[in-house]
Every structure is written in structure tokens, then in C-alpha cells.
Length: 200
Image (tube, rainbow, N blue to C red):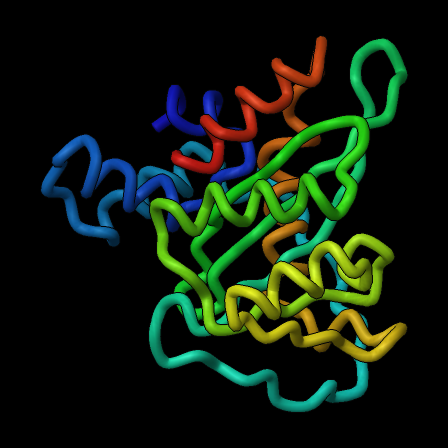
């Protein structure tokens, strides 16, 4: 347990237990594992943040099957040299599965289309893509490609990130478990670690 929580510093009890049960094959029940988890004071590693009361944002449509709606968004970070890079994240809203993370210093609409086509090759085509109103998503390159493949583009309202809550929550996990945990030497290094983390 200590080795596991040292290797995966951001994992809580749930992920640790599932790893021990499903990956390592240990038959211990969750009560026994949680007792050891608390005796080692591993439950005190992450101090919970105080919740802030917010207005109810309204219901977000929940797909009933894979490939109905994918969400996509950009993030940014820095290499060890200080150079900024961006990531293009794609996930399936149905089961919150991360489908792809593309890393580069620049990710124009043509690169976005290429990344989506690579995912479609192994995953299949989505019925719709949910995104914000960034210039890459509004460009004629992406709009024309989506029309050609009969994929609907669902744009959220400006200033309403809660309408794209699935990918925003995924971005938080990406930041928490991957970006904040590594120092990247190059774009290739960042892409390698992104792919390894995503498949894990």
C-alpha cells in the first residue's frame, strides 16, 4: 500500500483498492484494506478543499451509448525550458473515457482534425462533438470536415463552462494526475507521458 501510494501520489483509497483487487488480484475486502489505509494515515495525504456554494447550472445531457457525444478542449503548460505547449483533450461523455491527448506547441484546426481522425480510426465516429467557441473550433476547416462526415458540432454558450462539464472535470484530472506530476524535457517527452497516463 505504501509503495502504491508513493508511486501514485494522487490516488485515493478507491483507486488503490481497485488496483489491488483487479490488477494485483488480492482478495481482501474493502473494509480490511480501508482499515490498513487509515492506520497508515494515508487518508490524511490530501487536505479537502472547502466547498463553495454555487448556483445550480442545470442538467447536462447524459448519452446512453458510446460515441454519441465526445467533448474536447485545450489546456496549456510549460516545458522545463519555460517554453509553452498546449494539449488537445478528447473524451467520450458516455463513460468519461479519455480518448486522446495531443501535445504540441501549436494546435491549429488542421491538427485538431487530424487528431480526431486518428481516434475515429480505432474508436468509430461520434454523432456529435461538444466544444467551446475557440477559433480552432469555429474555423471552416473543422466545420467543413464535420459536415462532410455528418458529425454535429455542439457549441456551448460563451462564458458557460458548466455546459461542457464532462471535459472540464477530465481536464482537472489531467492537471492533477499528469501535468502537475512531471517535468517535461521536450514535446516528445510530454506526448509519451500523456499517452502512457491515458492508457493507464
